[in-house]
Each structure stands twice: as structure tokens, then as C-alpha cells.
Image (tube, rainbow, N blue to C red; front, side, top):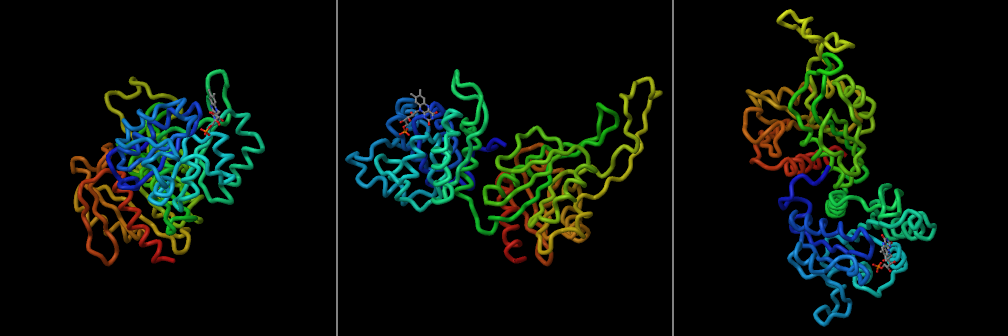
Length: 413
Ligand SMILES: Cc1cc2nc3c(=O)[nH]c(=O)nc-3n(C[C@H](O)[C@H](O)[C@H](O)COP(=O)(O)O)c2cc1C
């Protein structure tokens, strides 16, 4: 899912990000990354290798970050620049990372500014390799990556299989896309012990209940809220599974996404996974009813005789039916979209579905609920006053939900 809002927000806001750029064809993508990270609120120091300057101009990075791009280990102003950069960084990222850089970094070389900064930092490091597929498959490159990941604890994201530079065809070596790089840098910033190693299951989107092969009963859910939660939980270090009804959104980066269509499909997909999950967030807008007889062939107008009745059957309740099979000590969060008696209905849902937290919102409010990018929610918890939050982006609501879930996860251990 591309980063949906480029307003300053967590986890990038106010964070110091060192972005190393090395000399590969994909260096042009780093310009977009530097710009996006700056718009997300990061203070981005770009460090270019000498080779990188052959591909992209430092001036371009200065234009998008508003800060001088750094190139020289020995600049007069930059006495011990590497130490300052490394010490002050909240995260150090290198995108793209050439084969040569991987070799230098895995040897602990200190003959340029980005490699020296790596030695001087205790911040998380995220590396984004990009090169020709044959170079990437070379055992020496693989050994270097293995060392960086398993000995030095760096996170490695990509490369993926895809179109390489012109005339190089298709293969594994392609840099991941800018929004994915930004998410992985966000993970470097947001990693949280309370979520690391935890399994999180999120349901999202609408369901579509077929009337015939081309028509269905659906609802206006975009999936945006659940997708934002799944992505934010991944950034915090969780292993995330997203069970999603049909949605136009790109699947969140790093998240195992299971696509379903109907409430019955979602019921099965969730039931199969619930037993291993530490935190379950039910944000899907599951249809309560489905057409009793879904036709195999398209209904024709002349079958209707002016009116058409569709008989409906109740669907299984995805969240409630998991109660008996939930992992012991798991935390369960539900969403409630209501048109009246918001808080009372949310309290009722808390009881009937054995939720630890209900995130309620009012379908009548403008700028909240389905289809829009913002939401105004009320948190309802057992033995606590309900708490109404101000209008915020769904990305920020996702962080608030996970902050509450974090406390519940810690308490349940
Ligand atoms: C046109 C061109 C494209 C290159 N693309 C890549 C690349 O995508 N990945 C890579 O690892 N090296 C690539 N190289 C080789 C590097 O530029 C070279 O190894 C250089 O020493 C890397 O320096 P650096 O790691 O200090 O930036 C390319 C070289 C040229 C001339």
C-alpha cells in the first residue's frame, strides 16, 4: 500500500534519517524517497558516494530535503561528520545499495562517508540492494548480505524480481519501490519489543455476496482503516496477516495478505488462523446477510416482471465465532460503525463478541467512516469511560489503536 498521506506523521515525524545513496542505475528512485520522507516529517540527511554522483546530482537532493547533501568524508565543515551523523541518526538507510557497497560495509571499511557512518552508529540500519540479477546471485554478494543481516543485525529489504536496467531483461535484482522503501525505513523507526515476534491478524474491507455471476450485495468499505492498521503493525515488528475482502488498495508491504470475497470465505480464512494469533483486529465490514440462492447464470430483466425479490440468509459472525478458538491471552479489538446509540451499541458489542477494545465510529459523521481518508473514533473498553478522539487521518487512528492494543498485549502477558 503506498504511503497514503504525506503529511508529517508517525513514525517518521521529527526523526533523523540518514539516507545513503550508492552508484547504481536505481539511484533516481532515491530522489523520490528523500522527498517523501521529508514530507512525512523526517529530517533527511542524504549521503552520496562518489559513484552515486555520476548518476544523480546532489543539488536535486538538496532541493527535495532542504538540507545539504553530503558527499565528502574530508570536508572542512565536516570534521567528524560521520560520528555526528551516526550518533544523531534514528535510522540509517542505504538505497540503492550496490554490490561494491555491500562488500565494503560487510568488511567494516571506512573509506567513504556512508560506510564510516555505519561504523559510528547504533541506530537500526536498513539496506536496499539493487543490481543485475547475475551479480545479485553471486555467492560473494550473498555471503556479504548474510554477514550484514545475521552478524551485524542489519535489515535487508529486496531486491525483487522485475524489469532490470535496459537490455538486462527481467530478474531478481530490482530495487523495491519508493513507498516500500519508506515503509521499511518506517519499520526501522517504529520497531517495538511489545510487537516483535507477535502474530497479528487483521480483517479489512467489504465482503461481496453474489446475487448472480456479475452482481453482488456489498458495502462502501474501502479497506483503508484495516490496511493502515496492518501496515502500522508490521512497522512495529509484528508478523501480520491481513484477511481482506475486495479492495482497490495495494497490499501492505511485508504483510501476508489473504484475499477473500464473501463473508463465508472470510469466516473460513479467519478460523484457520485465529488459533496462533496474539492480537486480532476485526475491522472488516462483513455483510450480515447473503442472497439465499446465488444464481449460476446472469439474471435477465424479463425474469423480473417489474420487481425482483432477493431472499437473504444470515451470514456467520466472523468475530464472534472465533471466541472459543482464540489463543489464550490474545487481545481482541473490534470495530463498530453505528448510525445511532454509538457508545451503547459499542459496549454491547464488547460483551457479545468478547472484545477487549471496541473502536466505534458514527456513520452519519462527515469525514468519518467508509470511503474517506479520515476518521473520528471513540474507544470503548471494559470498566472504563469511553474516550472520543478528534478527527484524524486513518493512518493516525491506526497508530492510536495500536497504542491501546500495545497496553493490552503487555497486560495480557
Ligand atoms: C551504468 C552503470 C550502472 C551500474 N549499475 C549498478 C547497479 O545497479 N548495481 C551495482 O551494484 N553496481 C552498479 N554499477 C557498478 C557501480 O557503479 C560500481 O561498482 C561502483 O564502484 C559502486 O560504487 P559505490 O558503491 O561507492 O557507489 C553500475 C555501473 C555503471 C557504469
